[in-house]
Amino acid sequence: MTPSSPDDPAVRQRLLVVLRHGRAESFAEQDHARRLTERGRRDASELGGWLARSGVRPDLALVSSAVRTRETWELVAAALPGEPEVRTGDDLYSASADTVLDTVRQVPDDVTTLVYVGHNPTAASLAQVLEDGEPDVEAFVALSHGFPPGAAALLRVPVAWSGLDAAGARLVDFHAPTG
Image (cartoon, rainbow, N blue to C red; front, top):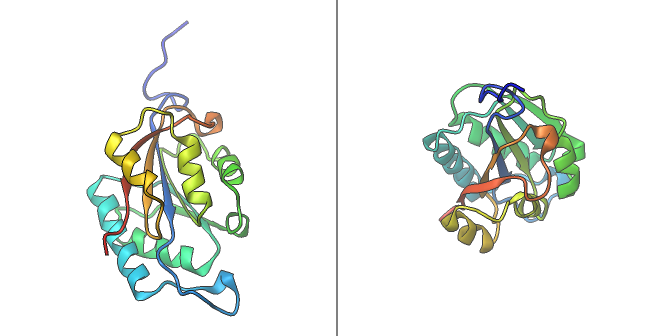
């Protein structure tokens, strides 16, 4: 048997960015139509800058169809290099962590950096379910204080997306807005 190469898509390190939309207005005619507040826009732009400084270069973004998640992604993406493919879906709007994980498992192997932009409690649940028990300590402590609007968890995934399961990723960083 030939040893696996690091370039083999099945063993290539991947990065999953789990991102909660920025702070949104409390009410709208429909929940789906809630827009970001001024603070939410500011936090999303700042988050994009933090991701860029962290060297994040997404290949694909999976974005809930809600207005606030699409606005968040647009502001985050404006600070990032390149133009990743974006898939916006109604199925991600009210998805559970299990449903999002099932969607992630369908991502092509050539995607090395994936961003999920969604809602709580799904974002927090997904990050916690995937965490392998050996996280970056500072990131874990920050995540344990909650997953506020405009926050992001970065998880290293050592398997193909199709093989990702509970406790299958390492939490390497966490960012929450400071404002």
